[in-house]
Amino acid sequence: MENIEKIDLFNFDLEIGKQKTYISLSYQVFGPPIGHAPIVVVNYSLTGNSTVSGKNGWWNGIVGNNKSIDTNYFTVIVFNIPGNGYDDQVGNLIDNYRDFTVRDIARIFWEGLFYLKIETVFTVIGGSLGGAIAWEMAALQPERIENLIPIATD
Image (cartoon, rainbow, N blue to C red; front, top):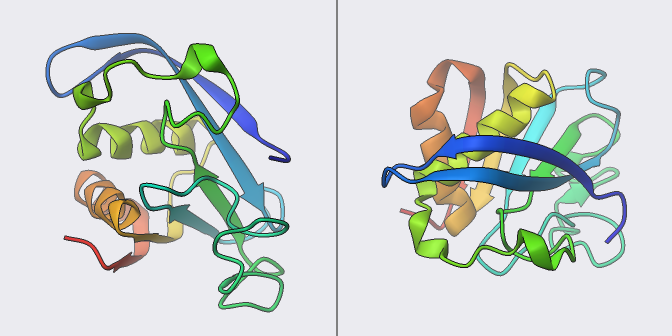
């Protein structure tokens, strides 16, 4: 795990009516710095994590230099689903993951993008659970996504 960044979210209201006083949202950025290239958000499947490119990158076949999602041209942002444990912080694990819906995760990802001062994205792509999160992101903010690519999802 290299270059993991973190955003602190406070007092986040979940769809079920509960409020999470604190959520740690970790993420990685690949390619040019934010603000210097079109943004591609990659949402991973249930067993993935934010490392989509480079050593141990689970999407190395399509994300990287001179790949379909070319990190010479695109800034790629990948958020970790809160509580997945990829940040190695035991205190950030979520005891009751059933409190969260796919829409909650999409809202959390939008909060992360807004925190990074990103108002629109060129593409949101995701497979399986990541595709479902992509659908929800588009449903929440359709005018902020230029291209939506859900893969193998409902």
